[in-house]
Image 1 (cartoon, rainbow, N blue to C red):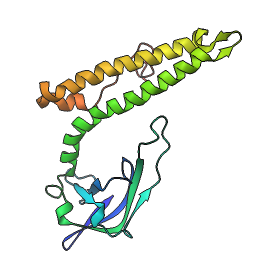
Image 2 (image 1 turned 180 degrees about the vertical axis):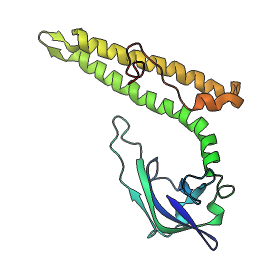
Image 3 (image 1 turned 30 degrees about the vertical axis):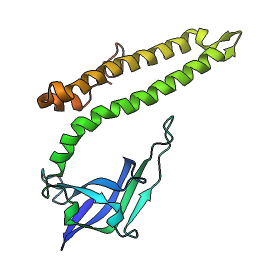
Length: 198
């Protein structure tokens, strides 16, 4: 995504996909390259109000297929020489990465609730199937491998919830150190691929 300076604003070119609510929202936050690629101050953040754009200069990208969260608009947006006024630029040109990283401290941690909700629904749906489905004169849940798989999924969700709760507490307990928690860590189980260095 690039933003080329022109009198009174910028011309946006490129695509961002996926973004949550990219199609149905009235405003999109767009991080675009305004400087030389690879430079620390090469990115600028724009708060783009789609109501003020020429509809022939931007387009929506298709929604991705989601499991259990079908109402979520995980789609994208593209621009073709789309003019945006200077007023849509947030702070100064080149400040975009710094602003985005500050926001990610919060949004990345809050995304865990979104994911845990979808995971919990998937687990409950699968558990109901395993308890009701009969194969070889017993339920799927009575079989050792499916039962172990469901148990491991349940433990993963519990560990992830503990981590998410601890991270969320950091918003007001240790805000000066929250950037460490906001990045999002991984809970390692014995025998996991990451523990084995894979």
